[in-house]
Image 1 (cartoon, rainbow, N blue to C red):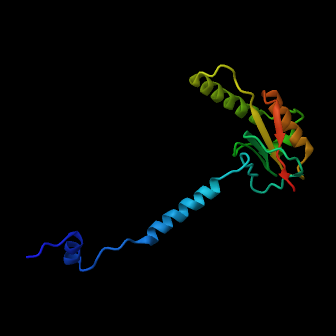
Image 2: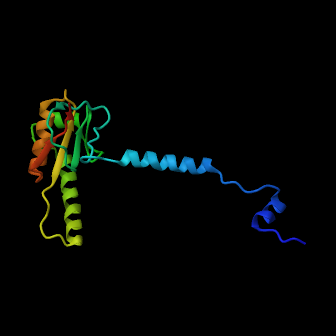
Length: 165
C-alpha cells in the first residue's frame, strides 16, 4: 500500500484538493484599507461641524488645534456633542452667563483636575475651546456663550471657520 502525503489524504477524504478562498481575505483587506484612509489626517485634527451648521469662510493658513467644541445650532447649544442649553432660553434673560453651560464646564473642569492629579501632572494645561456657530446666528447668543466660557476659565477661545483656498 502506497503511503499518501497530506494532500493525498485530504483528497481521499473530501474528494478535492483544498483551495484558498481569496474573497473573504479581500473583503477584510478592503475594510481595513477604508478604515485607515478614513482615519488618516495629514496636518491637524479635523474640525467636523455639527449637523446643520454652515461655518463662515476663512483664508487663514493656520491649522486648527485639538480642543473642546461648543456648537451653537438653531435651537440648542452642544458641549462636546451633548446638548446643554436651549437657544430660546439663552436669549430670554438679561444675564450674559448661561447657567446650564457654566455647570457643565465646571463639571468638566473637575473631571480634568481629577485626571491631572491621577497622572501626577504638575501644572494644569490651559483649556482650549472652539466655538462652532452658523454664519447666520444671532450675535447675542455668541456673546453669551463666549462670556460663559471666559468666566469659566476658558481664555483660549477660537471660532471655527471653513478654510477657503
